[in-house]
Image 1: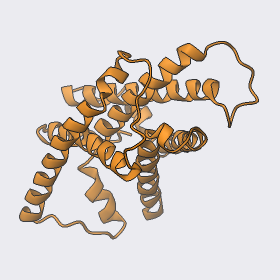
Image 2 (image 1 turned 90 degrees about the vertical axis):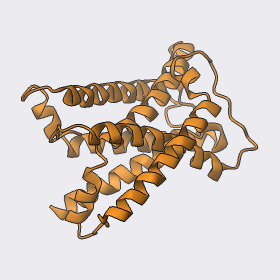
Image 3 (image 1 turned 180 degrees about the horizontal axis):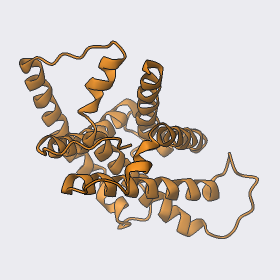
Image 4 (image 1 turned 45 degrees about the vertical axis):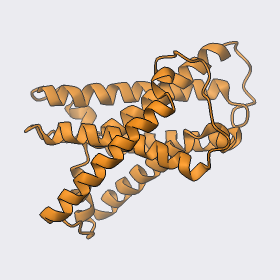
Length: 227
C-alpha cells in the first residue's frame, strides 16, 4: 500500500516539475521541450492508470455542485492532454520527425497553444481541489506534516501572498490571450533568467491551487476516488 502511495506522490511531483519545465519552451530549447513534454504525457498516463477507480465511479452516486466541478475539470483536462498529444506528434521536429507532413501544422500550432495553457491552468485547479489529500498521502508513507493552528495560519498567509503574486504574473505573461487565441504566438523574454521564469509560473500555479483549494475547503462535499 505504501509503495503505491509513494509512487503516486512521485508521479504527481514529476508531473508538476515537467509541467513547469515544458512551459519554458524557447528558454530551454525545442528539442528539450519535446522530450520534457513527452515525459509529461507518460506521467499523466501513469497517473490515470493508478487512479482508474475514478472512471468506475463516474456514472454512480449523487452529483452535487462540487462533484460536477470536479468532473468538468477532469474531463477538460483530459481533453487538453489529448490535444497536446495529437498536436505534439504532428508538430514534432525531433522525436517524431520520421512521420510524413500531413499539412495540419497551422491548425496544430493553435491547438497546441490552447491545450498547453488550458492544461496548465486545469492541472493547477485539479491540484487545488485535491490539496487536502496531500497531508493524508504523506502520513500514510510515514511522513508527518505539522497540523498546528499557528502553522496552518502561516501557510494560509503564504499561500495568499503566492496567489496575489501569481495574479500579477498571469497578467504579465498575458496567459489569457494564449488561452483564447487572441495571440497566435507566445512571447518569451530571453533575458529573463530561467529560475525566475519558473518562479513566476509556479506562482501562477499557486494562484489556481489556492483559489480552488479555498473553493473546495468552503464546501462540505468530500468526493472520493477522483483522479
